[in-house]
Length: 387
Image (cartoon, rainbow, N blue to C red; front, side, top):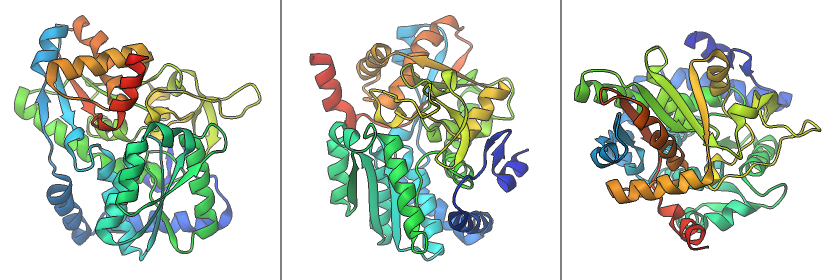
């Protein structure tokens, strides 16, 4: 099945490429180049070099003993994507795509960002490889993530504020796609999540699958068995698909995506085309993408990756919601029990584990993909908690 997905761009009924003809030619060429270079030993060697020497992989799978004792029930492990260079999982994909763009002769890179971590990762990779970098970001997210905006600018990126719509992630994607349509001859769109027209969902999964490649090996070494469940936050879905990838064939391992209750795409969405691909989408009564809200800017999106849509429809993965209050409680709990300040996105996964772990036995094992650190969110949380 995975082979068919890679050649057709579909996950069941979801995925595909619904774009203008001239852009389709660019995407077809991109898909061909991706398929070629992922088989290239020199590309693989360079990718592994930078994963190790620049990002700092492999990162730990840390037993959260204090959190486990506090909650009772299942043993809890944290996959520490927060320890990556730039502080999140986003650099895995940004690095992989920038190495591909370099081989394709690109000099201008564009990207979208919500929480800012993908923008920072893209700007970092562009600085390393001396490429022009333009980042589209919603005006509302720029307010919420001012520190990350400054980081991007320090790294040499031009950050373009998108005020239309809600001024959030969806609107930034709209503008980035418009830029690509206008400038596809000299521009590489470094898409940050497992969304968009083919081949982007397949590419992003490929570069993020390093997460589960490591965690599966690590948990077998530490515990001698696979986990009961792997839990990850789900917005567009890049960290979650990376965390799930190498467990998809292990039917006994539950895969659980956690989304905001005010952006519950997996639980309330319907099949529709968004940003050039088919997925589950939150629609209003007129059939337009519905306004969403999350305290975590990276989860504030009315769609989701096509493979997640398929995993939900097929029943292979479960998708649940948590409230903002539950997220803030989990954010503080991880700080106080483990000395780790998580990203608000990651705190969604922690929030669900706070409910799940006590219902399980001490023989059960849970892996939380801690997708990023919370430096970017501390000021926002300060204002929310202090009113």
